[in-house]
Length: 373
Image 1: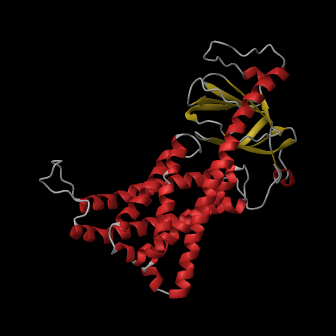
Image 2: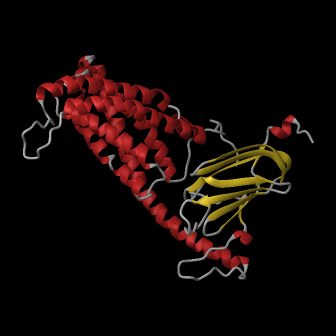
Image 3: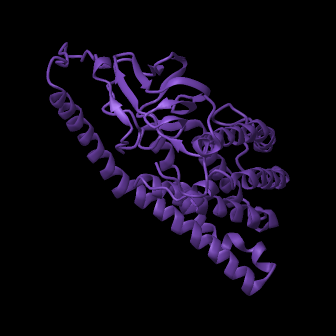
């Protein structure tokens, strides 16, 4: 039966029933006669949109789920039948018990437990008693989930929120200070920017090493490689600037610090809101859109500084080891800078490709105008 335009304009949530076993998570989307489906499944999330007959009749339904833990998307699959859409999501870690389906501890009215699909064997050879009443099972999972939620909420608010707030205030100060000095001293301020904000920038970027550990220990759900590239890359640029006075006065440094600051002023408020399970649509859009300009510009400016530093380190011989020495090892730092300069091309592509995929995922069904869930 064809849908009229007024029905198609309304987007609804279908009922989704979930369960799990030791090796996989199952989802059943309660839609019949599904057509025009769009499914985007990766290791961290699922996005679904389709026309079908659900709780509000024939309509357009969609939902997005960010998983509690990563899955193996390549080994996962789904099928469409006349009564429902069924997903079989392969767990990345077999035997890991999920206290809830979603990464954030938010209760969605359209997300239900499928009691027939829960069958978990614990390491102690004890089994959940599925002959117990549904209330007992709900209570068990609720208690397990609440312990995780309370612990995570405590870490999020008391540590992550304050960390992101500190970084946001720090980069806002740097950006404001640079604008003040430019207004007061004009073009001369660009040559002395490291004297004005260098110590503050060094402090913030050294503290940013914590973000690597946040990713390693699972405090945040961010992939480790992009975090390593950004933190180590920026600190390497600062290293060669700190040990060469000429590089502290090149005009490109002023613009690079400004680009870094703009990027972080947009990034950290987004993370602050994430820690308290809130979203400002404009901030989300900025977070996943501003990089389109800032990332290529930042890579170009970092390359400019490295290129300017090669002859300086050729003359100073700093960080260069020549034979003979106690280590019986030679290292020519300007050559390393040249290799690093060329490696920025694939590394930059990797970073921008990662952000492009993130943008597609986060803004796939995104609107700057608020929508009802």
